[in-house]
Image (cartoon, rainbow, N blue to C red; front, side):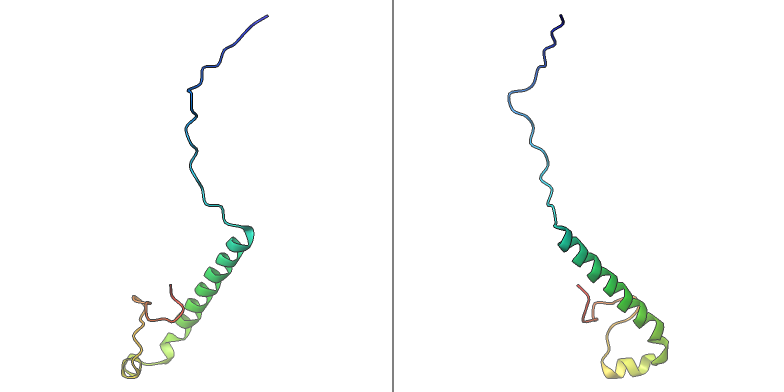
Length: 74
């Protein structure tokens, strides 16, 4: 007969707390991100139809490099 001893510290180290999102929350976040990408793609496809000077005159501040003026950006 063999005996094995396992030496363990008095307290086990705490495992890292991971925030677990529900399946519905992850699906909703993925849906929002997909819609955001689709909106940006649609705007990019039609951006060439309006001249830049008309956009500046109308007060449209969003550009290809700076999309912070879009109403749907985070």
